[in-house]
Length: 225
Ligand code: TZP
Ligand code: MG
Image 1 (tube, rainbow, N blue to C red):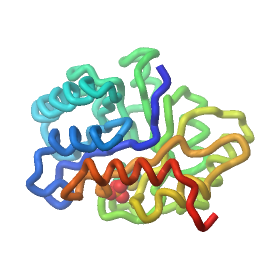
Image 2: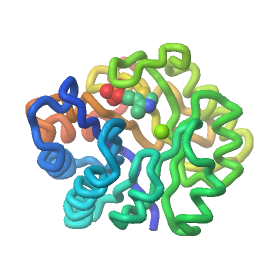
Image 3: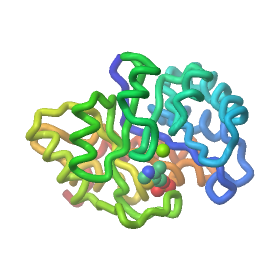
Image 4: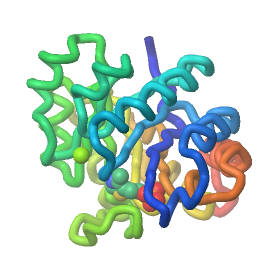
């Protein structure tokens, strides 16, 4: 089944981003607004609580027929029946995750640079999360800010290598820059399949409206081009 990566929601359970809202309600509203993939990312909760919330998110994503991926935790993905996982460079290696989850699992990998992108693509990642595009308080690692130029460079290399792997950009993306990121990074045979956002949806009072606005923007060529 081909996945629509166009508006990829990454969750955050911290008070700073989620506030007092219920994560499952935010995810449901976001999916109603047009989010096409959900990644459950929770860096602090214990396994039991990850599984509890993961199961709630599984029920919601199943209802709307949207894929659910789990950040970092392959065992949690299995326990909740998620479609797959998203792995950073510091997480379980792709081959091991693939052996555990099987050939049909969706396994995404974060790529901060050209070599990480090419390695993950050739080792059978299902998609790449490319970033960090812009600095963001949601993830404090300013050394790997690559900008639109960095994203474009990676897409060009994948394009020249005829690598058709889906790609999403991540990091500091919001309604004021997603069009630019989508359209200024295009390579001859390769463009971003979508954008991944955390705070632009999770930190808003109206996640449904935020998602539907982003969805419109990413499909529309900016007037300035
Ligand atoms: N990986 C690179 S940046 C980032 C992740 C998970 C966080 C992006 O958060 P936001 O709020 O969409 O900038
Ligand atoms: Mg990780």
